[in-house]
Image (cartoon, rainbow, N blue to C red; front, side):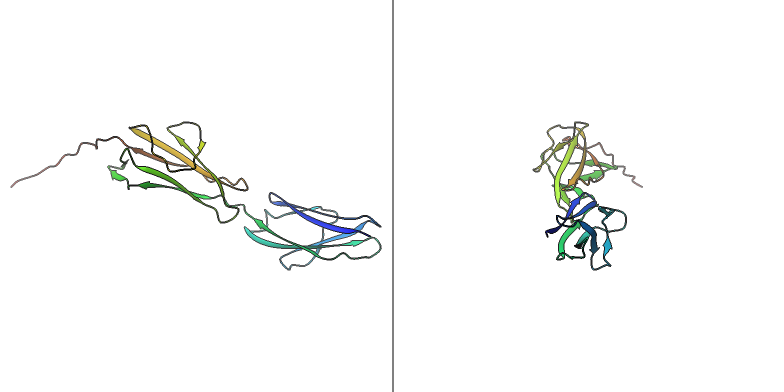
Length: 185
């Protein structure tokens, strides 16, 4: 008699299957994190997206064949990650804000930093002044002098995508005109 079980992760759904090449499989019991064993022989999958938070889950399973033989328990650690990465832009040297407008030096370096505690960051995408989004791997200096708009987002290793963020600024060399009023009494 040969009994085997497998648990495969497919996005947020786990496909659960077992096979007995002798008498056939009667039951496929699975439990998550020391919960009660549940027979999944008719269902074939476990949906983790609805009831479970991101994190590590220990899955254990065993089979019972049609004549009552029980397989050894197999165990697998899986990670659930439905959270998009966080992404920010770092400006060095720091920007100057005047009259609600952001100004940076034309040689200012822009760094895009993303963090994902689950599956990790796969890529960061940037669009400058309405161009198509492109992957950015290094720090960046905006080549166009004037008014600029940068849009950016990150994707993790499971395809979770952050919201697109946007920053508008000027890297023109001249600052806006200011006026100083002095009243002498």
